[in-house]
Figure 1 (tube, rainbow, N blue to C red):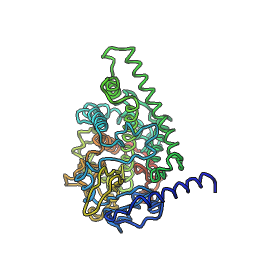
Figure 2: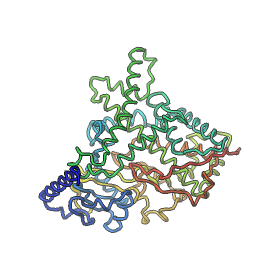
Figure 3: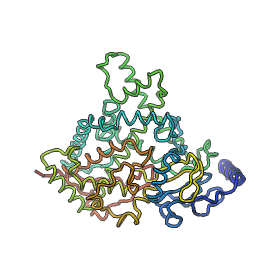
Figure 4: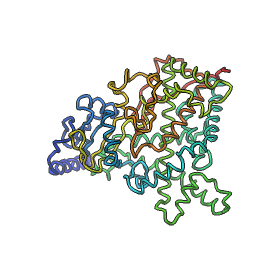
Length: 499
């Protein structure tokens, strides 16, 4: 046994005695499996916690207690309990336990995702919401979205001409990345086939993967200085690379503002707005906050949108009848001689149903974490202060008590219903969360997914690479902060001949 292993073991034993002497177990906690000394229920989690938690909930109920190391977790697995947490007691559960991987470079101090519900958090969220995601701002940028989707179609068309398969996730990622970079910096960051785009995507997905990993340092805080799995070390490398890019963009803009003082030279993009706040003597925000906010906009915006688009097209290829229906709807309501527009989406109910069904089966965030800021009683059980509350959206969205044939891709289930508008009121389907921490980027993501998917289906027919049949497609996922397709979707486009 080496010294490091011995040290870790000694620290865990010391913690175990400390926990044992800290007080009696709260007998009013929700039910849950018996926990082992020191590790608690860690061995019951596995590499797909969303699925493991759903399976345990079948035994212990929709409100369940798990001990993961020294952290008490309350797992929510039903729409009714989710409403209790995210609406009835939203204020009490508005915090988040900050993961060790988020603490690198003090990112959490300027994070709209991880900051506690304070005035600083509200101001950051307000700045983000009203400068990017209002209906007015999104409407003003419609021509930019149309341009970026046109560039995506041109890229796909080049592949179609030579019969080359397209990496759908990569193509959607590049499109979304350049749309965001134009909104923020007024420039494209990458080209459709550039190595930079592939490297940036790999960097973002590595960060998402690291944040989603089971990290011993989160369950045993005494281990944080040791970083036993190397997660903090790797995240530091990734964060520095992204922050370096942002520093270069900020320095370049500050230089141009200093050398070209005329207001007419301003881009009036998000970076200009943030720098105005940065230079305001009364502002509580500084450069670290700007970089943290930009990192979260880029990472969350690109990953969520590209992953959802990839899953949607994969499900349509896997279900040819649904593919035929959505393309027929596009032909009937838009035609082939006119490029589909955002305003057309309202007349495409089956397309909307496809997106909803994709988000039900493959939610961008499968398990939503919250933190109990105070002790709360729910259904006769006590949720202790500082407990982590995990809302298992994956389990709720596949609950057979809510959904008929829950594991099947059936867009028709959403036709003829005005429910499930994603605004956080229908707790059977809340892929963007609910309450005060609902995702502020939801309006942007929905516009982009609908427009990109409709455009790709209107302009091209698609076939699976290597001549595989739809039933032979690999539709497994891998767990992380978001659920990525385990085998990236690569499909061959065929120019559509539609009038």
